[in-house]
Length: 263
Image (cartoon, rainbow, N blue to C red; front, top):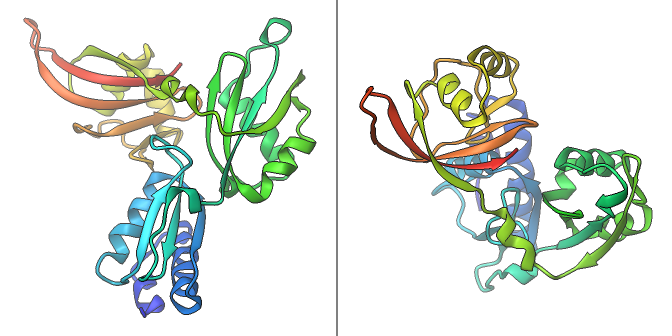
């Protein structure tokens, strides 16, 4: 077994401590009850913190999965020592929400999420929302998938249809746009300004307004230097991954290889 109290005592952020406590409770129930247990969807930052904090402190089989291999929001699944845990064990269902875009506005990730939250579904029950031309695939905890199908009739003012699906051929749209950009420095505001074609002032406002996250941790320091492999998100705008520093221009600007997601 493990000592839950000693593991939690060095975690200062209330939100992180709550998630860690839930995960430890599920691990404990798995070890005591000899059955597979799952932690609800969470973002990569919280999951990585759980793995970091509990490393070498609990001995248990686990797997992290979000419904498909490139998912961002995922569950943690635990299994007893004598059992293997498989992707098929996870209580995850994909719901396809479709609409006719020719007769209404173009719906965004925010639109779909807002309507699902409006049904009373908490965020922990929802995984990734992957938009396509005439709808979105929403990965949900299986306990709420039927509820969504029966009750979601509109997203905003647009009439939609929701149904459970196992057709994941759409997943190639998850990939982003790879390209090179030039920046004056690796400062956060400089990089985001170049990636998303925003003014430095607008970028600074977004950072100071706590709309920017590096590796899913909020960052409010405008002059923070980004690093290779960092994933940076501007809430409501998009996301970028820093792939590598490719070189310098003749004017000594930095050339960055990036992958851009979102708008």
